[in-house]
Amino acid sequence: MKLDRNQVPQAGSLLLSEPFLQDENFSRAVVLLCEHEEESGTIGFVMNKPSILNLGDLINGLDLVDAEVFVGGPVEQNTLHFIYFGDKQIEESRPLGNGVWWGGDFTTLVELINSGKLNLSQVRFFLGYSGWSPGQLADELSEQTWIVYSESFVQELFENSADQLWKSLMKRLGGEFEIQSNYPTDPRLN
Image (tube, rainbow, N blue to C red):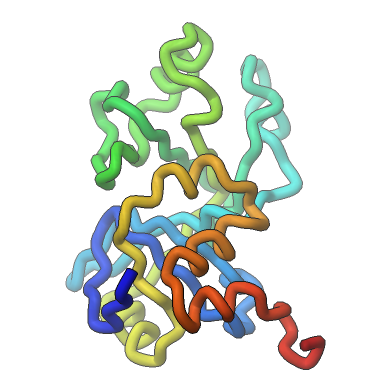
């Protein structure tokens, strides 16, 4: 895959953090962009940072008590969000491409899972989100903090373990990124 450093992010793109990004919220992060508008900014979810909580810790009375919850980002960590993949099954869901859908009515989601129409492995839950004000992400891209990844990624996103997702996607980029995927988090340990 040839990397285009000038690629413009859009809803449905992934952002891969550069290997040595020191921000603890985004170190080796894979962020799924859900909204990217020049005038209002950007919203996304970190796909590979599991929290210490599960859904049962957050919402009483759900049959989905063991559902893993990820830290979506540092913004509004008192809010719960979700994405799912497959066919659109929730009217209010927003398409992100590659069969991935963002949000919708939570009660409908629970009903779909409980009835077996949607498998829990097709859903990701997030506390909080990642957000960039207008122009902020463009600045970070010009500083080469992020790599925009727009290839098909659904299989990697939902089938890789959280600790392998970033590495798997970096390897798919090939070249220097495949090599960097094996670097230690702290380069002094190399």
